[in-house]
Image 1 (tube, rainbow, N blue to C red):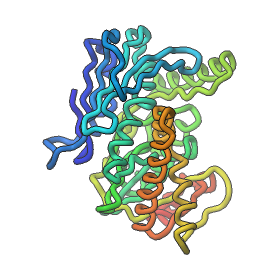
Image 2 (cartoon, rainbow, N blue to C red):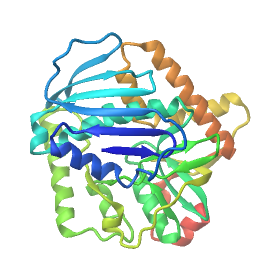
Image 3 (tube, rainbow, N blue to C red):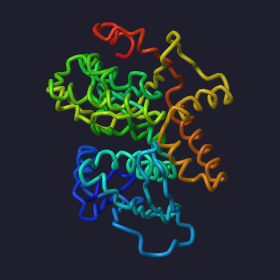
Length: 343
């Protein structure tokens, strides 16, 4: 399987004959992948599922054995991280035979997408942890920590005539002031399904979501560690009239927070710009997974952090200000209120 992420990256996945991985990533990336060939040569990330490693460790190769959430042990190798083509080999885990999502979520969030994040950052493009909507070719981006309302707010704005860019990740290029949509499946939890205005969530899906939430609570109590178990659903499956956005010019960035009042910050100097830029950088999760991959090379981590802040600062400078919005103070049943703030 081959997926192209605009003119920035190509991802090639070889499931090694294990169909569960193929189904998972096809569901995740088919709607994101842009048709046609790139206008120029782009970095390539290859993910191969293998049954075992038969070769010796190569010089410069990242070799990992990770115990994840006290449940699974994963083995993988990454070579060519600094090259135009990166190769990831992930050892097939038996659980993926009957429940591939449990394994594929780890591969995606802790190995594959952190590498994608790095290869985009090297091009001064941010794989931003944010939701986004657009109207008339102009986009609003909502970076945030998890659980602060990215999905709920972005889907609520669709009832106000906005188009969906994505609810969790977006590709943002400050050089051309453009955000590219990333419409992968929504990650639904019991806390937000009843807040999805205009959505038609089938009863069977609600049962599945509540079951997973119950399983999460049980695992957290038994293993004493935090779990994030979501149910993946394409927006079009619960929002019959949904319309997706094309690449759009970003004009607003509103950081979503859990407490406090709304405020707008205009940058007085470079120090203030950097301080608020770090808020966005630190709200990411792929970068934290990337730091974990590179924990053997702290100097590389520091260089990446510097590059992140530079790119985020470019994005903020293109807008000129950063809004802070507490979604709990918004009445999502009042389109006029939403339009007054985001229209």
